[in-house]
Length: 119
Image 1 (cartoon, rainbow, N blue to C red):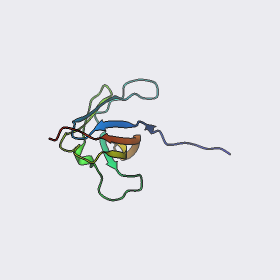
Image 2: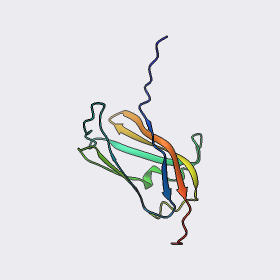
Image 3: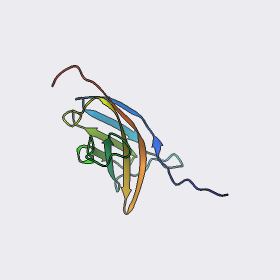
Image 4: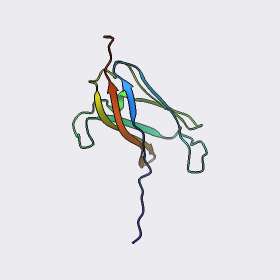
């Protein structure tokens, strides 16, 4: 029996800290190892309590700033204010859209460690 796996996403587990500015810098390459021009892509990332959580996200995509360039550099930023979420382990994914094609590039756990300093 033949099979095909169309899931190109990679697992990347993230640990960060409550009330700290979140900043993740990535360099995206194609299958040949060449930097991917990301200027025509749009990105969406959400953090949720579980994969079957259909309610409001813990961190909405509107609160994640994605900046990308033609050298494969993708920076994801969440302000300290938007990182004011309860400490715990959540799930996330990062979707890239090019035209009408939506592809999940990353997924995994999103662990938020408790903060000591009250802001």
